Image (cartoon, rainbow, N blue to C red; front, top):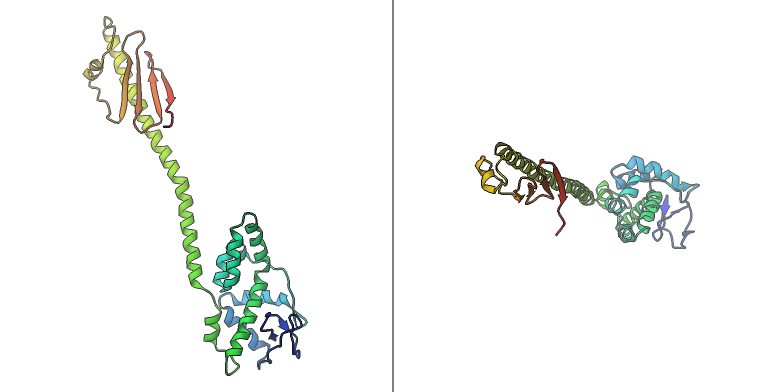
Length: 271
């Protein structure tokens, strides 16, 4: 199997010039199909068997042909998969396409359909370059692994970004929920305090029919201890129009009672 140095496409045995771009083809190297497959497997590294199986779709009658295949990593994390497989030029293109609204989604689909073919072309071209630099014409496993294989740094960055994104999503959901929970707790404290104060005041009025008005000192005399975080107000101390209000300083609601200790809620306006 011979690949063109210029376009990376496969040429038929015996050809001198590339039928695709017209460039002069390199001299065929010694080694049968088994050796070539071995070089490809060593170049690919991880998941070589899977990729070699996909590569068979692109060889027909000694020629390189395009065929649509699907690659899930190239769909979900196009940029990072291209970096991971050391196709840096394509990675740059994928990055900028991903910044364009709508085009980014389309590019993910296109890359997923062509990823295996692009990697096949990339591997073939890199193997030719390696052979052309090798004085013996053969390739060592160390050379193949160094030039091919995967970029673990890209994988580490991708995992880190996924982790950060996950934490960000959790925080975006949890923080408002926690804030809402705290506000409800503060409002509940204000509600309980105004109910307790109202019950004490009505008890005073019931115990003293002659008393026509409640003053704050009357409430304190019952042993009531107001919370410093709650703004408790005696709206009207008169027996017939008695009323209290309470609001936690960090809450969202104000609670108002009438002389029967019935509660009404008022939502605080945002400042």
